[in-house]
Image 1 (cartoon, protein in one colour):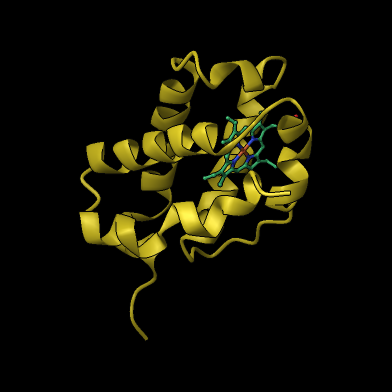
Image 2: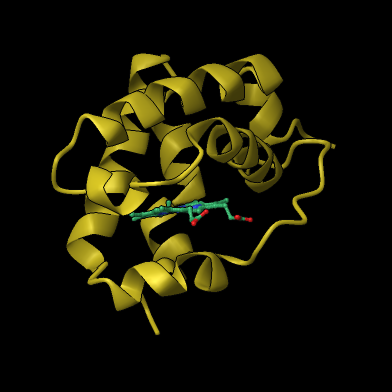
Length: 120
Ligand code: HEM
């Protein structure tokens, strides 16, 4: 069997580094940081590490909220595709900074798969 995307990008260490850098970018972006007001970012980073490891095919099971449920209250606060695109852009830039090859980043095709975040 071929290696999972999780293994090819560098395993758990790469996910941990990516999530820390990613939320640094998100929180520095005034157009989206307001959605994280009051959120415990330590917990959030922990959940995101599990979610991304799972989404990339790693040996973990994500049992948190589904994406639509997790972001429902944010959509009610005005979260839309422009915010989503900003977040997806920060994730892509993070993976590029960590030298994840472009074809591997494209393989996961974030925007289309995670669109439920902003679609009711
Ligand atoms: C690639 C798209 C995205 C993914 C994969 C993602 C992933 C996640 C995950 C795994 C959680 C934790 C769910 C749980 O509590 O079990 C979460 C929560 C959250 N997400 Fe996202 N998210 C995405 C897009 C966004 C966008 C666009 C925003 C806002 C700009 C956002 C803001 C939040 C906030 C504020 C929470 C915490 C909610 C709370 O605890 O009250 N997310 N997200």
